[in-house]
Image (tube, rainbow, N blue to C red; front, side, top):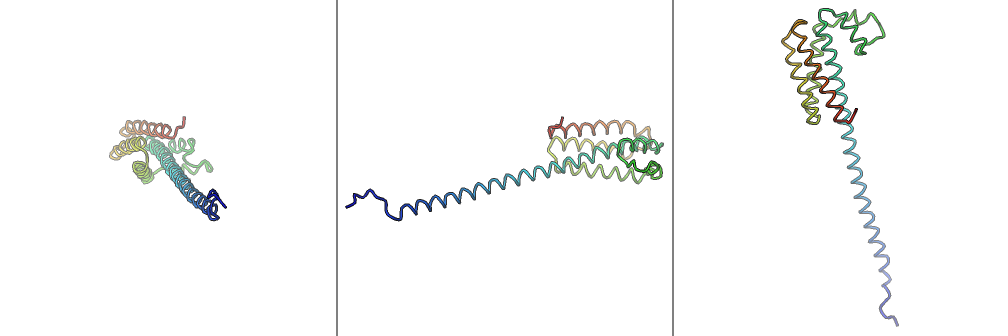
Length: 176
């Protein structure tokens, strides 16, 4: 006769089934954790890409706005500088001079900078948000000014704020 030391016939399958259920539950939990981390990482990458895109646009548009504002008396010079900086196409050397910057184009650049800065103020981290707000406030002060002499100090300050925004974004992303 048995002494009671032997396990019942159903004990081994129950223990194996318990480990199977535990393994499935742990696998499900770890997969969800991994998926949520991946989704968070992709969201951060998507926002970072958007911040870089907006910042690049602001920097290029402020640069173009400044050049146009300073060269409003000499659009050909402004177009040559913009072409040299790669901000307008170089494929047709006469195109920049046929399509001189008009007040409407300056106004459009003004609006584009303000919109990009406003978007940055909504989605960017605090340091970038403050730098974008500084660019926007200086640019708004340029609105009532007219004439090359009135615009020169505003353009200099706007360029300083543009460089500050660029430096802040570089620091945020760890770009040297």
